[in-house]
Image (cartoon, helix red, strand yellow):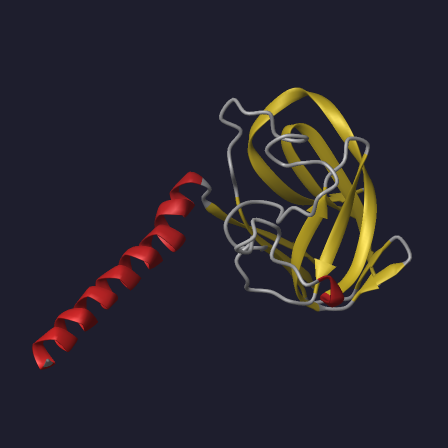
Length: 182
């Protein structure tokens, strides 16, 4: 009986090791992790996300359906962290760490900052792993079609003439969300 329990324990450890490898290393080889760091004066913003590639697929409307919450990248939920309060439209995002979700549509996107962070991007049901009760603010921004095609999903933060922009770029779509320091 003791030998059986030892063998069973070893088998369980091996299975857990393989599952961990697939979840954290193998899947990230297809959509590598990236961190955007933005600093201006005493403002510090960090966005950590995984960058899926187009690979000849139709992205928005198919791979990423319209009208459905998207984890905004791949693997873990994208995180957005700021050390200062930010103003999106007339809404205030307090300094802190958030999960960042989006609802893509052809003409506009909804950007969602959620108080929970650190979760895997999708649940067992295949939907975004987000508790809507923990949404802090939502903001809408226009979706613009570009002539140029971008292979890998990209998030950028830029200073545009005194105002800042959180930008999402993939395939032929660009969405810029303006914000300012409160």
